[in-house]
Structure formats: structure tokens, C-alpha cells
Image (tube, rainbow, N blue to C red; front, side, top):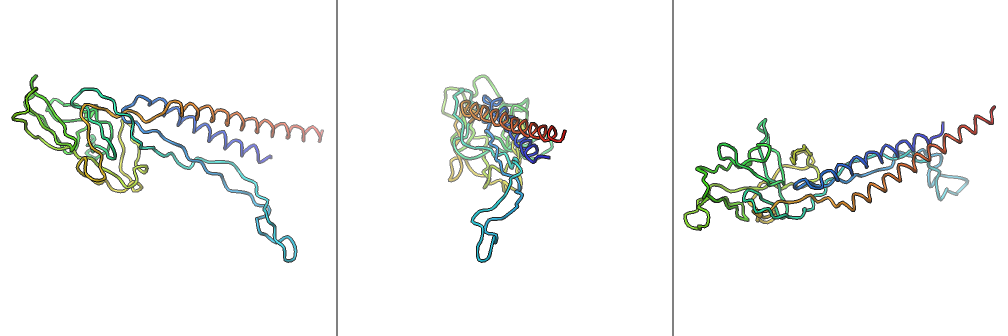
Length: 265
């Protein structure tokens, strides 16, 4: 059986996965703080009929080899943590990270996850949460809410409450912290704008926003997706063409087999 059939099949499978990844990027073009994924490929092992440098005669070696590849495989998907464009919302509970860092949040099972989506809300107890109800860490609670109460979040994460239109008598109720990782690409994507720490990412390093190595916070802004539609469309077209070319290679291999069978007949 022609090796080309199996080799081309690996190419079609790889391009199919690339299209799936590109479609996910495009689907999240308006998702708050979404980070695009890039696929990494590697060629498969080679069948060596003669390796480069092998002896071909007395005192002579082959300057080249005879090696036939067996296709391609998908190695990994890598997240690009380039900052998305900050979009002004005017909502005091919307907070964007300008620079490196993630907001720690506590999920339902008590474990900590990390997010860059700062579209926060207040629950029935006045606690600062994500839209899914996960508690922002460290816990911040706003007591005695009223129509005249205003919330301010400083660039260093300091959260204060006071009377709208007045700078007097403002009370500090807590301070947001952000976490950084030695290898953010090693974080596990959990969905719902959440990431989980892994052995590859390294342990979370909590710090004060604005400190060395940590981004600062901008109240009233949300970080947009870093997906570039034009780039993704180009990737989609290239993947589709590569898929078609690999299918033609399979068709060519099939025609060669058919010709061989006709010779026998």
C-alpha cells in the first residue's frame, strides 16, 4: 500500500484540527480578555533507507541520505497572552489589567482559578464576584449599599467606598491582588474565562498591582479579545487549501493503485 495515503491522511487530520482551533478563536472575538491559541506542528519519524554520512564505498561517505517522511502531527496549542485592547465601559466594577497578571478567584469546589476578565459583580451579600458567581480573592465585601454610594478601584488595587461626588470620608475595604506565572503558556484553559495552575505554568506568585513585574489596574475598562480577525481568516484559508492539497495527494495515490491493478488485469 502506498505510504502517501497514510501520510496525506495525517496532513488532513492536522489541518482539520487547525481549522477547529481557528474557528474557536473567531468564535471568541468578542469574549472579554480572551487569548487566541496557536497550533504547533511537527513532522513524524522518517523511514531511512540510507542515512546521511553512511559509507557507500571504500573511504567514501554519502553526502546526503534517503529518508522518506511519514506525515505530520499536532504538538501543542499555545496561548498568546498579548494584551487585548482596553475598552472603556464606565462601569465602576469593570477592571482591566494593563500588563501582566491574573485575578485569582475561588470556584465552587473551593479551588483557586485565574482570570483576566475583570467584569465583576456584587452578589446578594455585597461580595465581589465574577459573572458566574465565583468569589474574587482576597475577598472584598461592600456593606450598606445605597444609591449614593460609589466604589473606586485604584491602579494599585485599593478598593474604596464613599458617597458619590465626594472625596471626603472614603473608606478602604480591601485591596485586589493579581497573580503572575513564570510560564503562563503552561496554564490549563478551563473555560468561562478561567485558567488553572499546572506544573508547567509554575506556582502563582501573588503581588500588588503596579509593582515590578505586575500590571496595573484600570477601573471602568475591560480588556478585549486579542484575536485579529484578518489573521485568523488568512489561517482559515491556508488550512482549507492545505486540506484540499492533501486530499488530492490521496486521490493521486488511489489512481496509481488503480493503474497498477489494471496492469495485472
